[in-house]
Image (cartoon, rainbow, N blue to C red; front, side):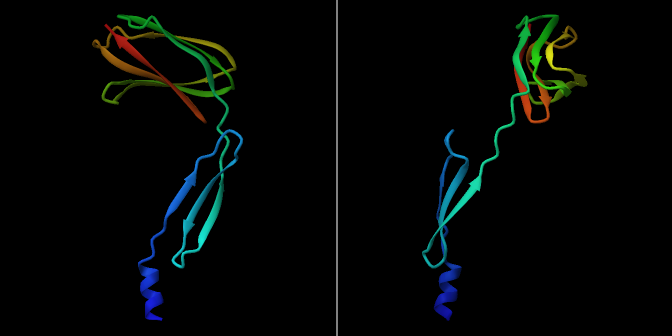
Length: 135
């Protein structure tokens, strides 16, 4: 009884995970219990959500004053637009309701010092970001 107790305390679990391919719908994990029995566990993979945006463009880039964000919205809903600096500090954020189709936003950035920034678009299930260089 004591030997079993000590063996269960010292048991090592070894995991081997097989990454799914496009044809596979689950991750298969093999591990060993304290008795040395191999246990297989299939974990269903969640399907990736459909893309939210297409043809995301930021122009002109680099720029010194005004830039335009252009993208195709694939599904209706709220979209969050934001700008962060190179340290990750959020400088600006706006939430807007958009319909599917071509979108274009004018961004006045002449008040920002020269540097590298990141503009992001976020909707439930997806995010896109683009680097913006201000001269």
